[in-house]
Image (cartoon, rainbow, N blue to C red; front, side, top):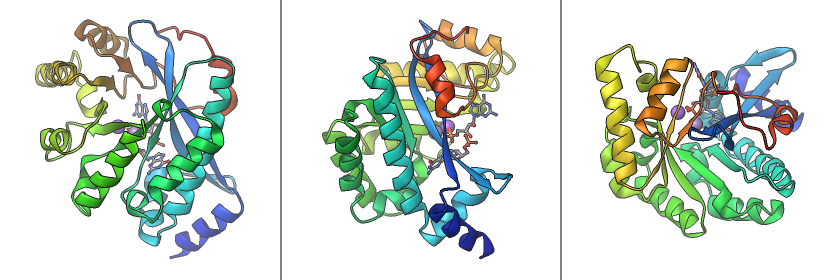
Length: 254
Ligand code: G
Ligand code: G
Ligand code: MN
Ligand code: NA
């Protein structure tokens, strides 16, 4: 309850910030996209998203917070693109955000205001979001996709129905959950499963992103598997916008 009141105040007092984690093309090491990740500095104390996203969802504060992240991130990425950097933006969606009134309109407005092309925006959803209000959620995401926005399944492979999800919603990308990537080269089953997910994604014509890359061996195996893109602390950590400025038009050293 106290956290809820603090969240409300934090929104009004602009205590939230966005960090961007680079996503690289594994063949070229070029940064092709950034994933926006919300940060809350409650005074001098950092509150991890895992601690406040639940309460924000329960109180509905996730809706105005997500709208701020959407507009701000679209604006910042559009500015990078204006310096002729062909970069995309990935945003994590919350269940409540998707079913809120005017969600589709809000995304369309953020694109129009910022000048970010719809095709440069990827919206990440997790499978659990299709359990409650599934029809409405699928309808809205399909509307956005019809506008040219890309859809990604985040944490792919961990949900109860990954494959059913692929049938229900037209998606462009799957993001392999870090729990698979963690086992690359160390655990035969996880290595095999990762290889199978990469092949499945490619056979379906999807972009496949591996998440949670921390060790050179993982990167090597993912490249050998032909995984399209990679993300993780070894590649680059989430960073403030001015950190991304410095990365512009560079290849990372991975
Ligand atoms: O990268 P990080 O540890 O900050 O993210 C923790 C969790 O919070 C992840 O599951 C991530 O998807 C989620 N998250 C981060 N930023 C956002 C956001 O802007 N909106 C939503 N809905 N979730 C986010
Ligand atoms: O659920 P989602 O995939 O959106 O979560 C993104 C979260 O993963 C962010 O909080 C980000 O900080 C974190 N993250 C990104 N790369 C790595 C990594 O290599 N290792 C670990 N442990 N976490 C990572
Ligand atoms: Mn994500
Ligand atoms: Na993920």
